[in-house]
Amino acid sequence: MPTLKFLGAIQQVTGSCYLVETTQGKILLECGMYQGELRPEKSPERFFSFDPGTIDAVILSHAHLDHSGLLPKLAREGYRGPVFVTEPTRDLLGVMLKDAAFLQEKDVEWENRIRQRTGKEIIEPLYDMKDAENALGLLKGLGYNQRTQVIPGIELRFRDAGHIIGSAIVELWVDKHGTRTKIVFSGDLGNSFSPLLRDPETLETADILLMESTYGDRDHRNADETLAEFKQVLDTAIEGGGNTFIPAFAVGRTQDLLYHLGKFYRKGVLKQQKVFLDSPMATSVSEIYARHRDLYNNENPEFNKAILRGWENWLPILSYTRTTLESMALNNITSGAIIIAGSGMCTGGRIRHHFKHNLWRSKSHIVFTGFQARGTLGRNLVDGAKQVRFMGQEFAVKAKIHTLGGFSAHAGQSQLLDWAGQFQKKRPHLYLVHGELDKMLALQNKFHEEYNWHANIPASGETIQL
Ligand SMILES: [Zn+2]
Image (cartoon, rainbow, N blue to C red; front, side, top):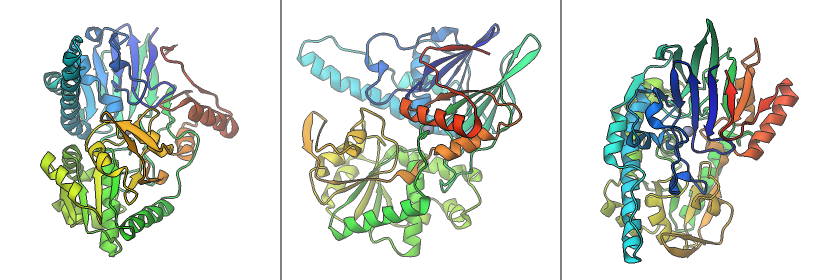
């Protein structure tokens, strides 16, 4: 009997991983990295609960590292099979997995310096650049709506999930003794209010449905209100003589922000004179976004036209700071700038350097525009910490912290319910994944109330029969 095993992003939002096993072979759906406090890769024991050499194929829904970031580790441990992704995802991973490998190498180098001084044994990186390159060599880019055989007896089709460029809802048909079971994995479903991308495609049939539940407990704030609030924060920052710092995911959120800032600029209401994209990765990703503009929605013809000649054409006060020196020079600007830097949850990247120089200044404004996982520096700040510790030091938090919920790249509760509600003919067996338990319970309740439909909340390691 074919089975599906829930391995990651179970009652939490990171580390996506599911294993489908049939008599014909094993496929891994997602190979995500953990972020935040629950990071098994930080612990020495092996963290794949299967032998990577026995996997026949891998499928990734999109490029975010919590869905793709352990792929180089899988390659390091012997995986040599195909990795099915959409074409934009393949382009994005080319940037992201190399960046992730670079960070792994740097982290370990730093830690080993300390270890050597204290006489401790040195450690190996989770994976290195060679592993990332090997993993990239395995990628097979597919178009949306193209049906492909993954292994004998399993077919795959990607549908547009509208979450980031190239993001997909995964449809899988699994054969068993002449009958077929259809699995639909929502991946991360986009927020229909996000400005650039299309709405998630609606599907109508499935036997088994795995659905994300990141925002299972609430709807996002209205998009117009969020934009008004964003504008208000920017005005307050400039009136108070400070800078605005926006920790942002390089993929998706950064491009949405550049879009909104460009709109403000073009309306003549943006008072700031400079916007810095202080992230080489976000810069490369933005270029990839511009390349795949055929996947944008048709609601912003002015933007779709402007982007043909690059982001600076849309937002003329935009500068890219590629080098470390250029990034450090931003410390000399004391007011009037908007600085967008990674990482989105402040677990690494240049934003931490900006925080080191600005978190303790009362004139600084920090705008969180994305989900902050438990245990991250970003979550601590959003939760109102007055003192935080990072880069080996304590910092007082005097900066004004703002959280803007409406920018989410994820569907809110009503959008999730509506999307699942399209499966009308026969309600699939529904499993909630990719969400914290309280969010899942809230969504489970809603499914009972609205549809009299039971949403299962699988436990980590649970296996179901297909
Ligand atoms: Zn995502």
